[in-house]
Structures are given as C-alpha cells and as structure tokens.
Image (cartoon, rainbow, N blue to C red):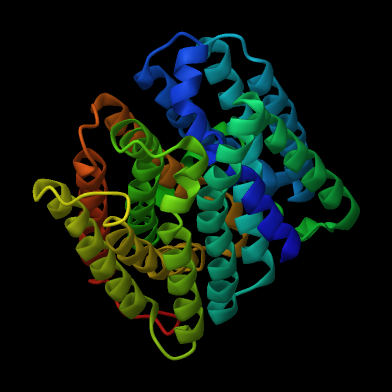
Length: 391
C-alpha cells in the first residue's frame, strides 16, 4: 500500500506543483495566460489517451514491466520540462511526462483489483483516493516555495527526483500481482471490442462518469485558482498553497468517513451524500462572487464542503466501477475509466483557459456544473440498476 500511495503521489504531484509559477512562466517564456494553462490540459489529455494503451498492456504482460517503463519515461519527461526553452517544447515535454505518469495510476488501480475485493477494495481505493487528492493540493504549497527560492524550473526537477526514487522503490519491492494464467493478450480489434463491451456496461460507465465529472471540477479548480487567487486577489505565489488547503483537508475527512462507513452503508448512499455536499459547496462558490463577498478566506468553507463530498463520491465510484468487471479486464477497465476521468478534466481545463478571470465566479461556475453533472449521471445510470450485495 505504501508503494501504491507513492505511485499515486508521483503522477499527481506533476499536475499541480508548478501552478504557483504559471504567471511567472508566462512572462519568462513570453507567452499568454491561455497557453501556459495548456500545460495543465496537455498533461491531462495525454494522460487520458495513454491509459487506453497502458491498461491493456498491463493485462497482457503483467503489471510490473509497464510500471517500470512508465516511471522511466516520467522521470525523463520531468527533466525535459525543466530544460524547456519555449512554451511549445514545454507542452510537448508535459505530454511525455503524462504518458509515463499514467502507468502509475492505471497499474496501481489494477494492482488493487488483483489483490482485493468488496469492502477491502473500497478501503484501498479510499487510501489511494486520499493520496490522489492530497498530493496535488499540497504540491502547490511546496511549488510556491520552490518558485520563490529557485524559479519555476525547480518544480519539474523535484518531480524528476520523485519519479527516480519511486522507480528505485518499485524495482526493489514490487512483485508481479497478475499471474500468467490470468493474463490476456489482445490485438487491436479485440481491444476495440473490449472497450466497446465495457462502454456498454451501464453500471461500470455510470460509476466512471460519476467519478469523471467530480474530478473535472477538481481539475477546473486547479487550472483556474492560480490566476483567480494570484492575479485577481493578489495572493503571493508562495502563499497559494495555504489558501487552498481546505480542499485536501475536506477530502481527507470525506475519505476517512467513507472508509469507516463502508462496512455498514451502501456505496450508493455514500455517493448520494457526497454528491449533495459537493453541489451545495460549489453553489456557494458561485453565490459569493455574485454578492461581492468572494475572498481567499470566504472561499475556504464552501471548498471544504465540495472536497468532503468528493471524498465520499470518488473512492466509492472507483471501487464500484472496478468491481463491476471481471479481474482479467481490470487493466482495460481502469484504462477506460481513467480515460473518461482525465478526458473530462481535459475538457474542464480547456474551458477554464478560455475564460478571463474577473473574480472566483468563473472557477465556481465550472465546478458547480461539473458537480451537478456527476450527481445527474449517478441518478440516471447507476440508481436504476438492481441493487447488488456489494452496493
């Protein structure tokens, strides 16, 4: 579990550690705010597409080799980001970094499916979900300090160091979790049929879209908050992480309560609770700017409501999606689910890049509609299904 958490942290820190540096990167590289924000979108887009390949590869040859190869590419891509002289090269390096980093997420989730089931899978996903939320939200706190002391390049050098250390730990400690008899080699046609079959599974796709829409709100926050807080609200870059600490704290609380409730409450009930909390929290994020009361301090409480709700929704939806498929297809299912999730994040960050922040209203609106969509998908695709014992 410690190694799986390290894998999640490695892939997710790269998304956000450089966020406090976005304004200075735009000036240093001589580019626009929108293009700098594309470094977030490029990572999510490449991450989404790469999962469709990494997952099936891990089903065919096992988990260990794709994971090691991905960590090597992630480390080299991070070094290339630090050395990038132009925004075009930086975006390309970010895509390479994402292709390597996606192995951490996809293979890590597949390892959980290989080794756990039922309530144990929910608890494991809760721990991994906690790292998925905490790492990218704590990373800007570190990134702001690195930006102030050493410049924006130091953020990418740190991710290279993190990738290298995780690579060493993986080589030394990870044993193969997918036995030979459970592996499945597929050609392109068979792979397309597998994805088509999975996409026709209403329960699997319902849980996947529920996670994706909630995650899209999270990615919209990450892409929009630096400019809303630093440029509009005059928050110093090194202090950005302090003002967004409400998100990881709320997510930890939601994950903890969700994990404790997993033995006596159904997944659907916990997703209902989380979805309502997230919608209410993000609705307040819209109302505060409209009433002229938005500031870094007044945003903390509604962000905590959103993140606590997300802590209920995400681990239960992830566990529900993966337990809806057979173990041999866990890698492909994790890949398709991850593609939907990262693809939704890609769309939400593109939307954020197209908006000029005048307050926190733009960020709040995108987050609100993402949370509404998450709850709506759950109601339409998951709730009508017959209740299973594991639900």
